[in-house]
Image 1 (cartoon, protein in one colour):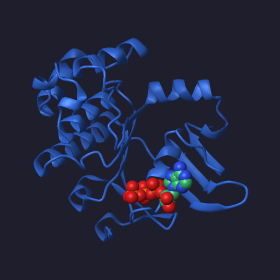
Image 2 (cartoon, rainbow, N blue to C red; image 1 turned 90 degrees about the horizontal axis):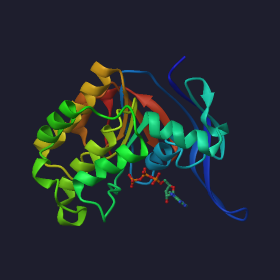
Image 3 (cartoon, protein in one colour; image 1 turned 180 degrees about the horizontal axis):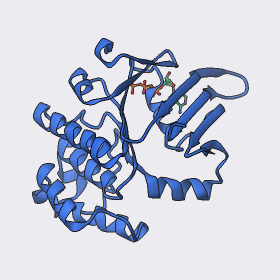
Image 4 (tube, rainbow, N blue to C red; image 1 turned 90 degrees about the vertical axis):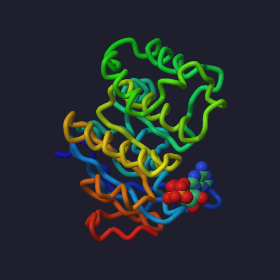
Length: 231
Ligand SMILES: Nc1ncnc2c1ncn2[C@@H]1O[C@H](COP(=O)(O)OP(=O)(O)OP(=O)(O)O)[C@@H](O)[C@H]1O
């Protein structure tokens, strides 16, 4: 059985008078050690699907099984604990806390999750790799979009998640940094057996993924990575 299994998931937005389907009958799986790209046109349902995978949004119906447990049926408190211990989110909005300096964004994580966070050596190496050493004393609104994105990436990885969900994680980065970040995510999957699921519009990043799940008009299917046509 795959580590993550999604069966017949539908998502409707709206109210009881008018509903619009955002996702229709989605079936998906992810195994340890895999990098999976989610691709598809704007508005096709990619972010909605990722939010459902991360438990931020509930599906209208269907199953999301993680390690054999139906995520949809978990109590909110269990889901929150699961997210904290297993998931790393890299979101488009970066989600850095505006009133905390960069260094304190990590200290806050230490307060919320006291054990199992990144060791100092690995942290220092990634600070170098992502070039954020000089940013530690700054507040998020003093940073460029790319700098905020790099901090957000390290903060997501800081809890040592085994599932990384990333919504366009390299969109604000220059070409070289985008590729290096993608190589870092690939290394986490292939060497540390994490699952990396990322939404991307950047065809260059497909060189670093194992599988490609394409969503078009709310319907999804795995397609050959080499055949992927990004719209
Ligand atoms: N909270 C919401 N309420 C109502 N409709 C929504 C909501 N969130 C998303 N939608 C709709 O669901 C559809 C899918 O949106 P979604 O953001 O998942 O697409 P996407 O593929 O991630 O797009 P993009 O590539 O532009 O980020 C769109 O028609 C969008 O308008």
